Image (cartoon, rainbow, N blue to C red; front, side):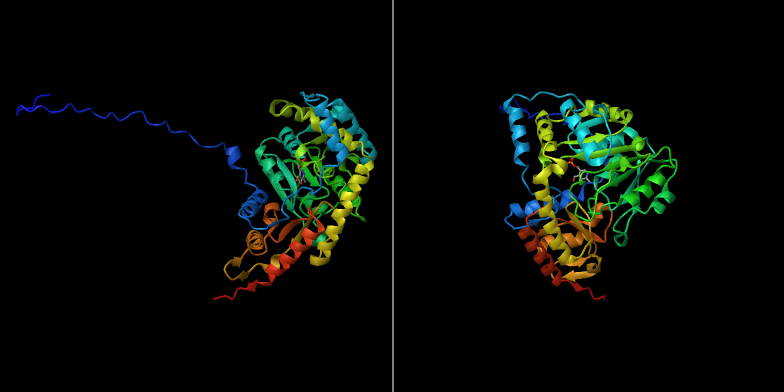
Length: 425
Ligand SMILES: Cc1ncc(COP(=O)(O)O)c(C=O)c1O
């Protein structure tokens, strides 16, 4: 190019800036997801894991899973299934072989009669509960949940566009649902009552008499179904005994019984649970499963057949695990005081420590700050009761060795010694 002064100017390359901007992505989520609360049990476990990764020797008593290995006969059956090429899809509802032995188990151990077409095997009891809630609840229905509750029940109700209605229970009544309170809260909107027996998180076991009183209330409401979560049925300590809700007079027709292999047989990673109930409801749940996950793992189903073949209530292998759970539990009861019951949790009222503070930590306001403090100072991971709908308590899982439990109890007691009542200013 020649300028007016006659000088030649080097040709300038013009930089072209791209005009296409990255298209903005709509990151909004469905109202259904937004209505679901994140799990506080997961939050505390994540915090504990982060500390362990940073080299802090945290004692983890937050998780809800046995510390035992899956019994050898079960593991062998799983390995044989792989060796024998039993690795293809099974029927959506589960293999006939497994559903048949589940029917035998329910008859023999629980006194309830089902045929294989009234059983749906799923990837864990959690899936069984969710599908049941989704299958029977319509928008606006109420799901009645005694609190403290298993963390997922209210959220599952929300996922079904139903409303969770929490009926509080009290430590003075062994955290058992009062039939009078239930009666006063039922209406035409009440669709599903969820009973967790033995209970996570409280360990409470419903006596047969109380279940009969609850059944009498339920019987007055034709729309009301009962989901009986019996996943801890065999982790139970004398004098407590377990009663299946569906075995009570008139309750079979309206009860959906959920059970699974995770807890009794130390099979959390095998992901296997099941639902038993009237065919109409079971088929509906199966319809959801067929479009979501299809049948459960073929290998786990072979292993589950072996598990149910170990004898009444899991035979010697399960009795040995339950004996160990009882020993640990007795130790914690001696140390902190608690109720008779089952599962592998104790749910303790620590609210007398609220309103105290520790140097360098600040105020203990609630179960969450107390659990954060116990993790910080005592290096013990336990779960705030708030996660289960009762902020006065914390849940300690004793699915860990006795020496670990003893070390944890000492650490908790020691950490509590540093708490001083805050002086009002
Ligand atoms: C009361 C209750 N129901 C169901 C489940 C889910 O068990 P699964 O591992 O079979 O999904 C749990 C697990 O913690 C539980 O505590």
